[in-house]
Each structure stands twice: as structure tokens, then as C-alpha cells.
Image (cartoon, rainbow, N blue to C red; front, top):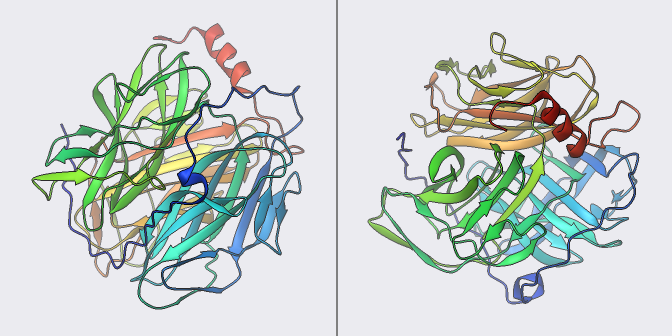
Length: 452
């Protein structure tokens, strides 16, 4: 088993806050499943590509003023308030990234109707992450920052690190809490997510803390965990009690998303690993402890890279090369590029393990040779997701950039070095139509894929 060797990172101020007001204090309840309206020509799709410079006060929440909207298909984002207002009931995936000063640690949180909902990103220098929320018509969402460095901090606009996307996509499972638990050193320990917000197909068992797929298909699992200031750890997905891939890495808190292909009846758990302490007691932290699962269709999943080096002050293509599946032959292992076959919005999730460098490594989404946005910037293990609007024939690749003053060596790592790509159904009206989950599941059934 290829265990991650964790390193101790210096974290300046955790900034994680427990609140007894707002959604965190509400009694959990299981909503009735969403009933979809008749097919719509498109779903919500928003991309904001900049912020207005602002000062974040010390130890207080401040709204992030995202600006410069690249697209807003349903006209639901207001630039003057940096606020998204839902026009219909549904699930909305919010992904965001923000860069601060290099030595400042901070978190990003979702606020719904003015109240803190959950934290979804945590980092030093850059924080990025995703979280799905269920909204009613006229519910509004904002992204807020919290930093506790001791003084107010200026956040200036960065054209590659500061961005926001919101995409309407169905989700069927949301867990919003857990009890305290003990995590021995160097042993994978199941995270006991147990408080259901909703579970539309009754696929999550709170007694065993595991998800069981009701249907064969691809599932996106997003998880978040707070462990306490100073403790470095990783989150991993386990499929049928066997480690599949690493999901996220962090010190104090971590969030991450990964798409995994399952057969009917396959079981998934999220487990953590920590090395520095003999045994760590992980206290419950309501704003940070959550899990969501949704069924999706992912065209491509790459499970490793070849070994490579990142020269100083240079961008280099990450050599993803080991295909787990590539349903439409869109990925070329020789060039490490994905070629778009239908105009749509695409979600790209990446992960890369760089244990020999204490300097952060930035992963960048590059579309048709032009740098789009960064998906993540972290030390040790860099992982993140980004949605981009692409056209037929566009190429997509991931490039890495190291902040180290020396050449950074990256080894092949089957647990940490991975890439997934998926088209988002119903998005990008006017530039083409992506198939729905139902259509593509039917297509796969007709092809009678082995193991399905």
C-alpha cells in the first residue's frame, strides 16, 4: 500500500469558526427528493473571473467581491453584491478560488440567505474548493472569507487564481455532520459521517458510514474534514474496503472531490490517514464536516503520471498517462491532452503529489494552448477542480508551476496523481448540447461495457 508520508507544515492561524447560529444550529432533517420539472433547454451556469480588491478584517467574515462575469446563462449573478440568486429549486455546485498573501492562511465559506452554511476551502496563500447546496427559488448564495492572521489583509485581484463558478446539477446525498472519533497514527480510519441532510435514493447508511451505489455509473464524491490546528492528514476514497485514490490533503482542514466509477452495489467510504501523532482525537466541527455524492457521467479518468521534473519559473505539462477509462478516446496519453468532442461546460479535477518540496506547486488548466485558470496551489499534494466552457476541437491539458527556486522532481504515484474530465449535461446553450445522465447511461448499456 502506497502510504502518503506527511510533512509538518507551518500554518498561521486556523480561522475555522464554530457558530451556534444560522444553518449550523438547525436540527438535521431529510428533505423529500427533488421532483424534476419537464426538460429545460439549459441549466444555470455562471463563471466570474476576477475580484474587486478588498481588505479582509482579522477574525471576522468578509464577503468576497467576485466581479467580471464571463458568462451568466440565466442572469442570476449580481455584480454589485457578488450574490447568486436561484430562480428555481435545485442543487447548485459552487466552486471558488482566492489568492491572498503568501504567508496568510484563510478559509472560504458559503453563506445562504445571509447565514453561514458550510466551509468549503482552506489554505495558505491560495484556498480553492467546491460545495453543493440545495436551494429554493430566491435563495441567495455568497462566498465569504475568514482569516485570523492578527491584522487586516489586502486581497488584490489575480487573473488566474481568483474565480467563481456555479453550476446547477442534481445531487442525491448530503451528510452534514459526524461525531468525534479517534485516528491512530499510520492507519486509515473511516470518517464517521452520519447526519443526513438528504438521501434521495437511500444509498447512505449512517450506521456503517458508507455509500452503496443503487445504480452502475460514475459518482462524484466531495468531502470535507476539520481535524484541529497543526495536524497534517489526507482523505482517501475506499471502494469495497480497498483504497481507490487519495481525495485531499491538508493541515488543520481539507476538502476535495473525485469521480469514481461504480457497479451496482459497490460501497464507498471516506477514510483519513495521519502520521505525526500516536493517536489523534478528531472533534466534531459542524461547519467543516460534510460529504456529498452525485451520479454523473465522466468521459475520462487517468490514474497516474510518468515521473517528470518542473524547471524553475517554467510551466510544464503534467504527463498524465495511465488510463482507467476513456470512453470516447478523447485523451491522448502521448501528448497528455484531452480533445473536446462536443461544445459544453467541462469539469476537470486534478491531483498531484510532490512530497520532496515544501514549496507550493500550482496546477493550471490550459485550453487550446492558452492558460485558463489555476485549479489549485498547495505544497505536498495539490488537488482541485475547475469548470471551463469549451468548444468542439478544443484541447485541455494540465500544466504545473513550482514556486521552488530549484528544479522540482515529481515521481509516479498511483494513489495521488490522477485526472478526471466530464461534460456537464444541459450546459452552454447555444454552443452545443451535452447528453443527459440518462441518455449516456442508456448508451453505455447498449454498448454492454464489461463489468457493468
